[in-house]
Length: 252
Ligand code: FPP
Image (cartoon, rainbow, N blue to C red; front, side, top):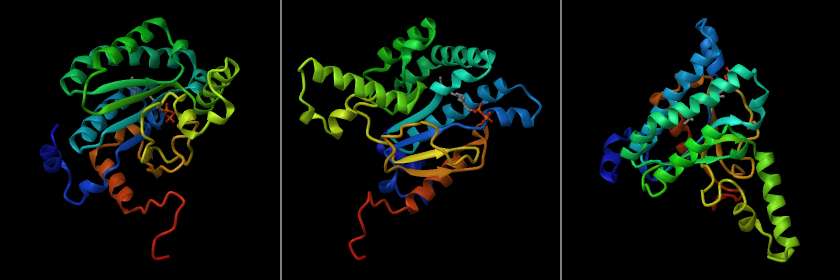
């Protein structure tokens, strides 16, 4: 996607200069969407994948550079085993099926989380997709999988403590930048906008450090129904916000 195409595709009431660089999504409500239709929860997850694909396409069309989706939390292991198995197999299938399209669209995919605990076949598919798309220059697509923010922070502390113990760094070297370099999101700028579907007003252990100053948009719409119009509404709301990062306005 080049800059001209982006401007053509962008709805006229959105300001191209005020677009978020990084959008994060908590894709909530797949189960409820299915239940309301008398369908098994897994059908909601299948539809959820289509929604995510469409959002990725839309971000690309509208010039958003980074999209991060919360696909599987460290707490999701507590779901019934058949649902966990379904989700992990679904991720594997989606990766295999979509890799060619991601290459075509120049998408760079990255997985965030404790990947070692995932089934070996999924780990292999993840490694393959990350390696294949590594040099792509288009949108960066991050998928948080077996991700938990507290776990991420603890593992960063352990890595840093080990470096101090080995004499590789001094305690005085520890600052916010060094800490960020030990998070799964190393090298990724923080989300400007977090969207959560299905009405819950929670962060649910997602990017707690990274979202210190993110704008939050919550919609009652269930994830499978989150479409371009909904995303457009979220972006309009974002563009009306005044981001102060703890400061005050010049004329206040
Ligand atoms: C929550 O709905 C949603 C999930 C557990 C995420 C499912 C993952 C995807 C749709 C995308 C996977 C993508 C890739 C690229 C591998 P819920 O079950 O919590 O809904 P409920 O709150 O209504 O029960």
